[in-house]
Length: 573
Image (cartoon, rainbow, N blue to C red; front, side, top):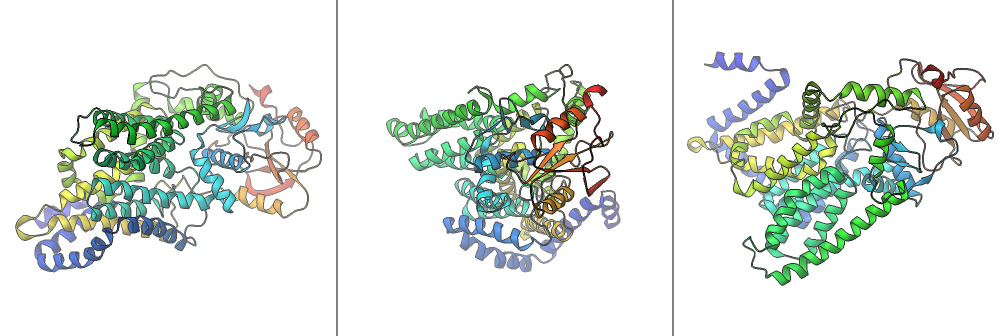
């Protein structure tokens, strides 16, 4: 029998095999030494259980712990450098807000600065909603955008604990918050980049936590928090936030109609909850309309939709067919939108299947870890748990809605973060009830799952891995090195970025600028054509001009010589 088990484990991949070995090890100890293991478990858990009773203190401690622990490993995981196209767009948004504006005027030389995920007509602005930009703006005002990224992840974990306290006993809420802190607060691109999901995850936690409290108490405070949570979702992940709120809205209307066991009379429900919530939601809708109007000239036209109409060659949802080829003013945009996007999705069933698999391959390691499979026996009970019907409905509706979208990175479904940890912790609660005659087998498996997460995070930090997906937060050292070098030289500088013919549009995207173009110390522009370059140089005749080619040497910076490098993109089409 032992040989059979060994052969079975050997058939699994290394990481899964290690997970099963740890689970078997904990199980063996629980079965052979039940009293000793129970005593050890109680010794460790008792102080945490006592601490969990001070709910406000737990929220504050978790917020602080996430920040302190991440700063403690800053030598292994340094302050992140931007690398992904989206990060630069978010940083532009943060810089714009930090300058006290919602949008910037279109620059006369915008064709040379045109880049990914940025609108130029009718305003120079990011295509993204303002939520993450507000966080980055706060960080910039404090000294660096990453400061507020770190604060937002701590606030997200605190919000998740607060939400869990409304759904679970206090000690289990503490466990869920600790798991969230370990998963997202140290070795995750949510804290190690500028495009994570902490803001939307915080909004989802506020919504779910406030709704559970409203049903029980109908307090105005919770109605306001529900409205704030919805506002955060609307300003960070509007589409995913809307889907997330559909089951919540149904539950709210069911409660408002008096179909639950609430003893609060209708007039108090209206006065304490409905009216304050309606005020917050009205202000949210008004702000979104104003924001859209300032950026796109139309209160009903979102900047994201405007950008899709201007640049995207494929639609936003699976049922939409690719568009006819558009005209792009530089080769990098053409390669990305007209080539790469079409290769990813061409409205075939095979493309749908591949995109779905790709989403799941990214979602699972972002929100879970391999050790969580040890809680599967408890999850089976959770699926039939009446108290978990709403979270399960939210998870199902949100997952389907996100799978219907063509593009979906893990942080797009960030509103579901609180639901993920709620279901996971509830599964562990059920798991711990598995006690074959006097043996704490379920407790041992739950401890093994937690220990595996701690071990995983520790190994990631030791190996200087900032995220399970790795490619999302490595940073572009070459651009930062050149920018730092030029910042130390006198005068203003204009860097002309030239790419090779076979340039990878996902690497070394250096043409990004902040909200203030004319006054910037260092500007980055595309090498498009001799004619466009001549206009650019004439406009910035007070700047020293440099040429870089990241595809050849990402640290080499040479003075620009007239007539070098530029080839007309228009003539090559």
